[in-house]
Image: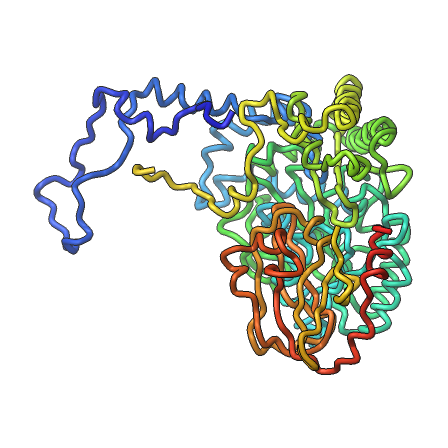
Length: 490
Length: 128
């Protein structure tokens, strides 16, 4: 398998051409510039390939890719739902796609209106008081949110608050964002139901009191389990003057049914590209707006979009008294906002609720089938996803990695593996609402087959994938000898 | 799986070997390296760093995840295993030998009493 060449690098196709293209000397003899001799060169190692071969090369590469458009993709925590094609059609309209961020407000009223109305809709959906569409994706939203928390406490003179409490089931980005904002992270453990252990949390709150800045929670959490004690957690943290941060990665599981604002969260980030459907994970950029409650409104990044009653115009607003400033160039990943806006208005309130319901139904249907072979250590009913364990195949010498690689042979995408860390040999499966019963049944059947193979022919699993264009990669070599630049002599 | 009798063990899967009256060598257990999988990077502490038991001593990255290695005892780092910079896989190959992480000078040798014996550790991870 290793020796089979699927596709040459574009550099290796050099020479296929007949030098069909010639580039004029763009500078010419008349132009002289003071470049040191040692920095001058005559050659440019640029592959000479005919246009038709360039097109074929990249088309062949694209065909080796796996995507939501080619198969079932239940990658836990990533919400790889189908993205309606009509959104791409509208977003590629020149009147949206060709806008320039330096155009004056009066020239881009349509785009500003989309941003303004989307902000209003997101406020309604999350139960928050103000929105910033700025952040480029989820983790960037976290960073923005933790910066806002820091600015808020500085403004209040409460600089002694240095603790961020984060559960042991959290996304790794949570402690990373908190650390970037200068907070010290304290981990709170999960109980046997996979939820925040209230005794452990009380102990931390008792010990640190007014040193606590924020608690960062995902609800439903990464185990697909709803934090039932959320109101009590909010009371506890607010009681010592701390803030609650909501990681919106899993909003799909409660869409239209519950709102983070009502649970007591002060800051929320959303992953528009997940919950509100825009191609992501190699398919496009993300978008991670944040929402805040009234008391944090004055700390949002600039600019936001406002509506000026007097002139009847939408405007970019830079006048936010304690703004943390800019978090990125320009205003947002606009086309992702546009796609999410279309998704929300075309589904409507009841439609969004149905999204949440079906995401939960699909996860529970698949969970009931999968757990016959691979137990699910936490929870009985799940929201949008569940986490099974591959530990049952330990005696066969089969690991979760082998299971994941073998799934590729069945033409489906493996689940997220080895996360969350509190489940050993974790298989984190999120089917999303857009999959048919047929696909769920097929996935369960594939896992059942793999379970059987592990007992009959475990060796075959160790070499999997066996039917994919590329076999098992050497992960260690990939990390230690990562080679991403082409060099001719090799 | 191998758990030498002469070592002390922590709940966070580190081992401690007494190599002098106030000197210990520290690493991670066979169980820990097997759970982590192939280790590709080790972030070693600086020599002279003062640690309280429970502080982060090192960070170990495998193809699966990154994990903190906690100092099982309080003390000062007096030696680190520089070899791990080039060959982090030594932790997988020989967790109790060539894969050691650091040598600490103990503040209070009686802290070793808080740690587990090989049998207790084996019970904790369900190997018995």
